[in-house]
Image (cartoon, rainbow, N blue to C red; front, side, top):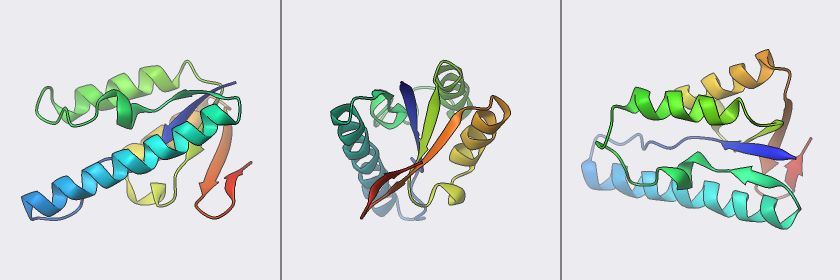
Length: 114
């Protein structure tokens, strides 16, 4: 089963350094979950790792459109904790719902919940 990891990428701080650290934390969290999913037998697309630290290479919308194209190839989506506070992850969730994909949720303590 091909799954897509969805969650916050950007940081929320107005301070550049703190914001960059938040982005790096979000990339690491998504990568860690993707690693666990691979270990569970899933095939995984982790957009956080795919475009890690490429801010400014292209407009944000270019990355978001590309992420949606990758998502459309998937059988399911794994929502990371706090996804509902990320405009991009909410958009990805809505695409998954519209396409009737399997939606799963990652819990930091329990792992994957279907």
